[in-house]
Length: 167
Image 1 (cartoon, rainbow, N blue to C red):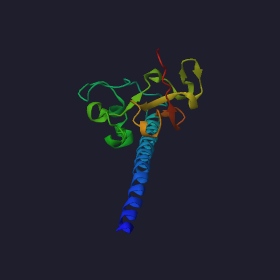
Image 2 (cartoon, helix red, strand yellow; image 1 turned 90 degrees about the vertical axis):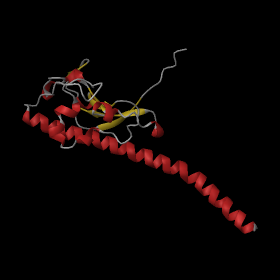
Image 3 (cartoon, helix red, strand yellow; image 1 turned 180 degrees about the horizontal axis):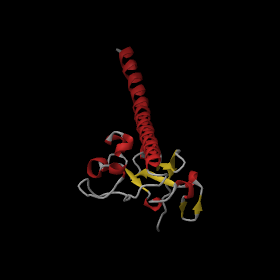
């Protein structure tokens, strides 16, 4: 009887340790998949550039609803990425994709600019520092505070958000 109780106790400890680890692994996987979707959007954007003379599209940052007829990320780049689910972050628990067509924001400050002369808030020609597309919110709070961001040079990075205490 004592051996069974010891075995049950050991199994309980193992489950107690493995469940949080499994959740963290699952959250990391979702975050990685989301970053991969941003890379796919970047590839689609490059395909757009080839057809449109190396000029950024003119789009709204985001729509409130799929029914809006505004040029948005998921409508303008759909033909260049090939699948509407490219615009869905697997960790989108706010259902932004279902409501608006995309889990991501477009940086409308780059609208209509040439890739060779990109300017944003005083930065000129520094594509590695100019964000183009980002998560609509921190979908990845289980793995840290921040959002995934696609930059003009094509790299994707997790940006940490700083919370300011307003006391």
